[in-house]
Image (cartoon, rainbow, N blue to C red):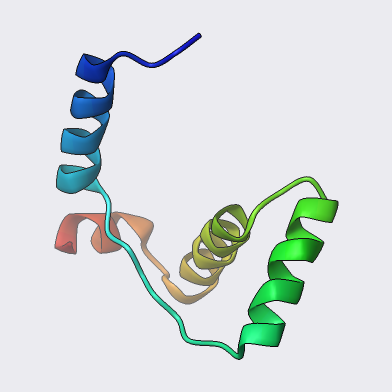
Length: 71
């Protein structure tokens, strides 16, 4: 099912309000290999990064409540 223009606009507004992009520079050959391996394993780089970020926060933040309320 195609996404309507209104839904695309609503999604873009929500993303602008609630999301932030984090960029990283890596060698081109590593980036291409990483993307290829992620696809081969049924995932994508963004999903892997989100999982790693969540795990890092969990391991390094003693009180999750403080983190989310301080942002």
